[in-house]
Length: 385
Length: 224
Image 1 (cartoon, chains in turn blue, red):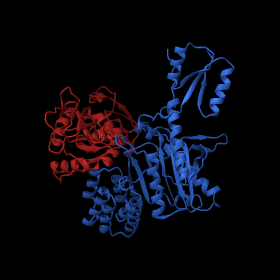
Image 2 (image 1 turned 180 degrees about the horizontal axis):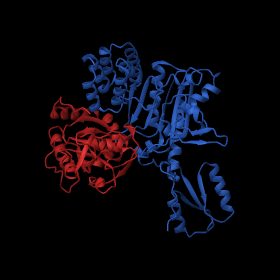
Image 3 (image 1 turned 30 degrees about the vertical axis):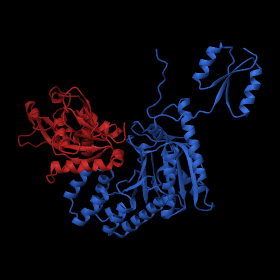
Image 4 (image 1 turned 135 degrees about the vertical axis):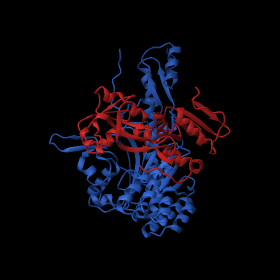
């Protein structure tokens, strides 16, 4: 006989130890974001399908959970927080002084093939910096991403930074069709396909070198500066110069070990217009955070505003950490005569302790066992049994 | 799993023996490892490398999840698995191609066959994803039946109108009176990497890539 009621693939229950772990992580991240001057916001779990898609998140519409309301309008569960926040800021926060610094802790929904680390409902903690342009703003968001992963408890992570504008500009020199196939090959690091494309297409030796450079190059400031020496395309040159500036700011803050550039990082969302980045940890096969600059998204909602942001995937961080840090606060299991124990419990709770009252008169041995199982200290009220 | 170690997944069987030959010409070279023994897990602490011997179809899975950093497996398997892995080097062995094959009596004497005849037909394959995608792109509506082996049998007994399979010599097709009427794509073995490992263990992976490329030689890239 089975008492197991199934839940759909891609969603999960959080039992007390997991929920506590998630809550602690969220609390720490919320505090970090606040210290950087970011304010918490929340948007609806579902909204009109058209607000989530027509503005060009570029997310495959098959990934959305859709349903009809009773008036026949199409609704969708939010697949990320960036688009809803762009919608909210454009329609509700136009008068606010810029730049805006916003953060969120929210669950989002995508109809993905389910995997470890790829759930259909998952939790994100993220920030959006709106109305700020340029390398200083990008560096702030990257710096905050590093701080967030550290705060979440990760140690050996690294953040890879791409620049879609530079990559697009370099590929833009090719004809449209080959530019798309090159983009796909570079993004998926399909070097075999890349070589086939290079053989087939009639690119010049110089173009060939640049494409290989885009696909392969990575590293820090000095590698970027080397790349700048060979790039002639003006837009790409400007975009990469900005990237150098960002890296110099991060270097100044002692973060050069944490970041590297890789122009092959393009991310799935079409709305990115500048830097894009992903956080990696050893032995986890997928990124733990992702983000970038998206200067055109808010304009689509009628409020042209430059923006950068990122989100940390909480389940992925939990997978990478494997074990929660055991920082459960101290607590007591109270045993004693009723209703006197209630007074003692109230007193201890006011002092900030976690208190569980045991209403049954258990023998001491059993009470101790129960207390140990709950991670509590047994406290027997004086003079009572 | 330790961070400094490199984990490489190799396929069982002939493909694996060829893969091992290539591995042994790189800085990962090891002695004493056998592909076809019962031991599926080999550790070489002096090189900080471990090898997993898996079923070929499982290799993209190990690599996609990051249980293995690198893997060697046929392009056919990668495509069928639809795995999100980085494909680094064409190792140029284990060549085969995907074809659509139909019973010989369906084909005109000049070898002509109109693929449109398979519209609304049934296609048997060990590679349902490859088959489905091919017919979708060809604009044909077919029912794909997944079988686990000996699919040559399916057309004979009326289970399917055609099959999609990989052929290397074409002998099996001939023996079962089947004729390949359409090439889908060619496949060879590839060196694949997990997308995070590629970035976290870049230095060592880059070296292995360069060594593999040198081993298989440049030029002679197969076109699809």
